[in-house]
Amino acid sequence: MRPIQMVDTKTQYLNIKGAVDAAIGEVLDSAAYINGKWVTEFAKELGAYQGDVHTIPCANGTDALQIALMALGLAPGDEVITPSFTYIATTEVVALLRLKPVFVEVDPDTFCMHPEALRKAITPKTKVIVPVHLYGHSAPMEEILQIAQEHNLRVVEDNAQAIGCSYTFSDGSTQKTGTLGDVGTTSFYPSKNLGAYGDGGAIFTRDADLAAQMKMIANHGQQKRYYHERVGCNSRLDSVQAAILRVKLQHLDAYNQARQKVAAYYNGAFANHPNIQTPVVAPYSTHVYHQYTLIINNADRDALSKHLADHQVPSMIYYPVPGHRQPMFTGMDIACGDLTVTDWLTERVISLPVHTEMEEEQLEWITRHVLNFFD
Ligand SMILES: *Cc1c(COP(=O)(O)O)cnc(C)c1O
Image (tube, rainbow, N blue to C red; front, side, top):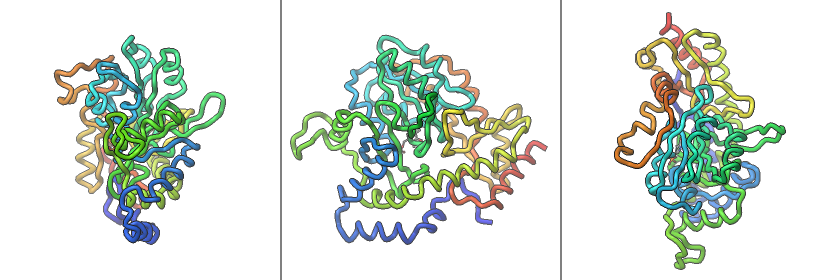
């Protein structure tokens, strides 16, 4: 049995090595390391995959969020509503731009923004809602978009963990997450579902004007070289990463299906266990299992983690400290709704290894050692 890892990017690479090495070789031969044709081609292909949306590649998923917020014409102190139960990047950029993070509660089943909590957090200063499709499952977007419309708010979806996930509206139509709000963002960090071999990110929108603004912001605020219309930043996806991502995009659906197979195995093994709550998939969302995250009830989650480590099974806590408790926000102007569920989850969640190259033997080993912890 191969050693068990949270993600196994090496084995995944070896399985597509020929195509990846050829793609990298092409870039090296061309010497167009920045702004090579691979970047435009990749943006086109990913935009088509997402359902014909404008796609702006950038340097990473954090920049994608920052650029999206910069494009919305916000003023310092404007309020941005976001879950506290997310990776720090989501909320960090809000504070970085001198906007006010307003942390709201998540639904304990889906781990995503709770629409009722969102409604309660809206004030006259609210401008943007940033739902996060955490672990690979969509936030309840139809309700969120409805609330946004009622209050004339913008929606920026943090889709870093859910590329490939589909949302089904009540009329039966479906759309990819990251294309439902005004703007969607994603990350190509190597361990993400569509991972590069370095950093990368992208921004999606259906709005041509916003697309032009964001493209300009990512490029030093210029449309014409050396004519800078607004303050922007330097955020590029490089040609090597774009060439790699073009190869990997062709495998994205198969990769997500491989993750779903792992989740199905785990779900079967843990079904009806009194201490284990397996991930819930809401009727409106598919799940692409960026993480496979359990809630451990009436047992010591940290002792389980240690027990697993003692048996060569890695596990992770995503995330051990919720945003609203991070020292970085101390003394800053933030607001919090009731975050009881967020704090509750922080103490109970545990993520098991899930990736595209897992073997049945490994799954059997992992589930056996999870289950025997409770014996
Ligand atoms: C990974 C991630 C990001 C940031 O992406 P980077 O490419 O690492 O900057 C943002 N939000 C969430 C939810 C993420 O998981």
